[in-house]
Length: 59
Image (cartoon, rainbow, N blue to C red; front, side, top):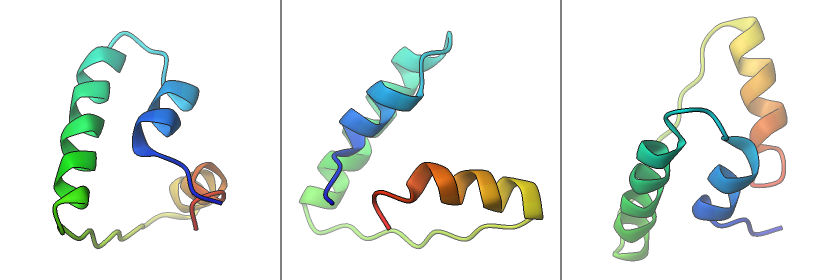
């Protein structure tokens, strides 16, 4: 399943900093579309479990 970063942010982030996060997501999307790459690392049992659930559709 392919999920755009923007759609992901719009769906999961609705807090007071969502506007800034949305702009960051658009910037990241532009970076990736121009050949940029990401390396994601996770640490901590609860944070890893929660982010895993959040990213499950994209993994």
